[in-house]
Image (cartoon, rainbow, N blue to C red; front, side, top):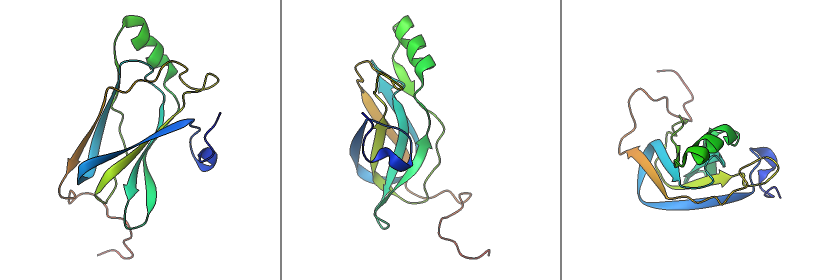
Length: 134
């Protein structure tokens, strides 16, 4: 069954929120699934000042890669490109489609979630909420 909060975004059935110890500007994620990989359809960062989730990745369940890794006995490693937020965060949300109809209907086991981040925002990154060109 589709999660009630999935009205205005990707279809997901379950979510997992993770709190990291140190807030950083997210640069990349590595998420490893020994079983049931490919179910991640959305990855979000919590913007504390706005009290909102910001999408960093949105996609469909990766059924093809899931089948390939399962057939070969490999772990599924999520390391897709993402939209980098312009704020520090220590809280992320993984939204998963584990439905039999559209997602990955296997046991969805996450081995680890690694957040790679920076203490300072790269000078080449456009900041949000800018109202004029300098």
